[in-house]
Length: 199
Image 1 (cartoon, rainbow, N blue to C red):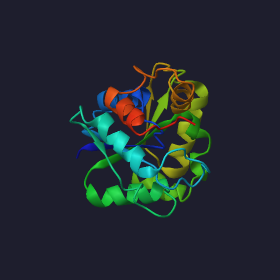
Image 2 (cartoon, rainbow, N blue to C red):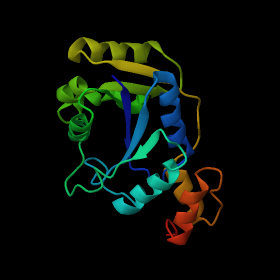
Image 3 (tube, rainbow, N blue to C red):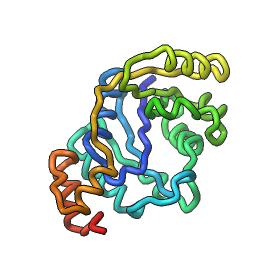
Image 4 (tube, one colour):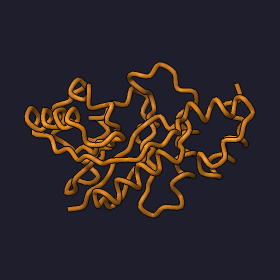
């Protein structure tokens, strides 16, 4: 049985911290691959700066150099909000015999049990929690709660602090500054070609 990582997000734009997170999980958890899944209609974010197709195209460019990275347009093709449990159910039909590992940041530990159909989600897949401050007693307590209440399988993956965000990149481009070395060159070329984030 292989482990397949699922890494979702708005990716507006995708950058090196996203890719590093995927690579970190590949190495730390022995994943066969990581599938990057840009959100289509986000259920909780009211504004996404860039349309779904362009964000998916940027993901494809970003992962092209890594044979163990893939891009999925499952959520970007959906006309309805993208709930994590429905995405996991979709990939479970594609990989019924494998362990799906849902990757997210430690901040989501505070409310994951309140996600839509959380009990189903926590049963369908494992979780990889990316932490930056180390495995604290607070994180340990939250993970223990998910294991006890839902029988969840939760992995903790420590990550160094990377001060890169999509918002910072959008601001830099809007201000006429170079965002090179914060994201892959093909993604930056795509952004420039289409005049994205200028306003």
